[in-house]
Image (tube, rainbow, N blue to C red; front, side, top):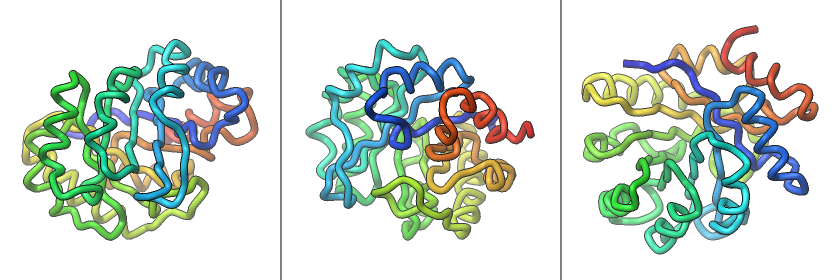
Length: 221
């Protein structure tokens, strides 16, 4: 069953010179998760942050840290991110040939396990994994950079994965990430997404606007 919509600001769009303050600000503004994009310059064409930064900002919020690993290989770094304070660790199905083993490793670290699908990966990729995940992340841009345009075809993928989740009877977050804004949010929610990752749409116009930005993303305009 689809859960209430939750907003996960992506700190990739925050002011990195004030990262701790930014995490505090969006937490106080009503965010539900803190979404942390980890990129390695190999699996995706950008480099962002590692476990030490996650550990440094962990005291800045009591919200769940939703750590999205856009890296390959994955397994060597799972434990470090769990120890740094991740509550959810998501790995890409495309990042390795043994994603089932990766999900087992994540769970063994005592955190929730997520699996992510790039835009070109079909919904069927989750069929043999749905019994062991806590979150499914659908990318609505090709990962690597913030501020990209939303790929509308991914809404149909969300619908198909929503049907699979409902049939499973399990409480699995269905997260949509990429190009999200207040205009697209109602379509994403209607398609079945219940966690919206929003970077630019959350952090635009500075801290005084964060609460209003989050409210609009919830469809409360």
